[in-house]
Image 1 (cartoon, rainbow, N blue to C red):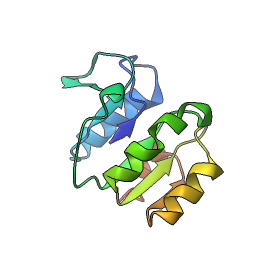
Image 2: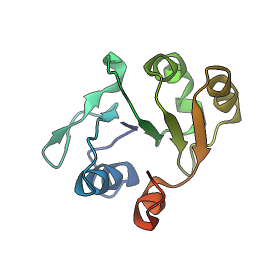
Image 3: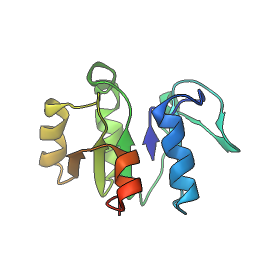
Length: 118
């Protein structure tokens, strides 16, 4: 799941959806702006759609725009959460830790190109 996905092709959240798809991963783009990334619809983050079996949530929202989604993300119980540059959030790290959810500060695009994403 890509949290903060944007239909704007120059945004990293857009690029990472395409790279994940090219690498063979099933991707759920979630954002606040409607649109598509390639042929994939961006799910409305405000709807907080129920999903299950989420392996990774990669975050492209800055710290001040994350608080509204803390409970939603924790309730999804992902295997891990990746905080991309600009999304670092020690307050949220503590909540994830208390919930038993792994997290890391990393760049998902770099992880994908170096083979360390999996």
